[in-house]
Structures are given as C-alpha cells and as structure tokens.
Length: 147
Ligand code: C2G
Image 1 (cartoon, rainbow, N blue to C red):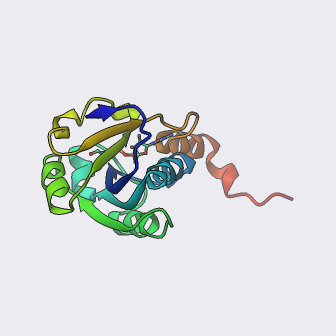
Image 2 (image 1 turned 60 degrees about the horizontal axis):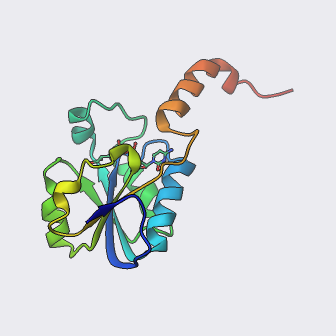
C-alpha cells in the first residue's frame, strides 16, 4: 500500500537521500518517520551514486553519513549506491515501510508488494539547492566579520 500520510505505527522503516548540507527539512522528515516507527534506517547516497543522479555534493559521503548517523532519530545508516537496491534492502533489513518526501510521490510504489510505501509532505521553503544558491549569492560577505 502507498499513501501520503499514515496513522499506523511500524517496526522497521527505511528512507533514502543525499542529505548534503543537512537542513531542517531533512531533520523534520527523519523525526516524523521515527514518530511512527521503532527503528529507522537511512540509506545515504554515495558520491558515485550521486554522480549517476547528476548531483554535485558539498560534503563527501563519509561526512554526510556520519552527520545523519549522529541524529537521535536514526538507528542505522547504510550506503545507497544504486536505484535497484531498495527491494533487496526491504527484504534484507526486514522493512515494514519505505518513506520518502512527496517530491518522490509514486516513484517507489513498485515496492508496495513487499511493504508499505509512505510519502510525507516536504518542509516548505528550504532545500540544499536553496542553501547553495544563497551561499553563492552572498559570497564573500559571508566571510566578513561584522563590525
Ligand atoms: N526533504 C524534505 N523537505 C525538504 C527537503 C528535502 O522533506 N525541504 C526530504 C526529501 O523529500 C527526501 C529527503 O529529505 O525524502 C532527502 O532529500 P535529498 O537529500 O534531496 O535526497 P534526494 O537527492 O532526493 O535522494 O533513491 C532516492 C534518492 O536517494 C533521494
């Protein structure tokens, strides 16, 4: 079953993402998932997989993975290095629910024969791309110390 929200509680959840320049949108998603599950695995995209996704990251995989693992909502971090690994992960980790932000709505419904698939509303007004754009726009001024 796939849905845009859930009232159920689950034993084991998994989610996938790049998690570059971690921001409140990422944290809100992980907190909400952990709110309806007992155990949360986050598959963080490797640098090689991001190249396949045509994404350029500021932080290397090791750093992004360690930062996500440090969040109290997260029980385990694994590498995401292919689109195809999700079915294997669901079986290997005994997953009950795959959760993504709704910018991926419908994209992982093919997993619904194995487990529940839930898409949660994204946090408005923040994204890694917006952060990068803001930093580029403010450029040197960010390095100057205020008087
Ligand atoms: N997200 C959110 N609110 C935001 C920004 C992101 O809820 N304001 C969610 C996204 O919907 C996603 C997760 O945070 O579920 C991680 O987002 P990204 O790091 O941008 O991950 P992405 O590159 O979309 O990778 O196989 C799936 C991919 O790995 C997803």
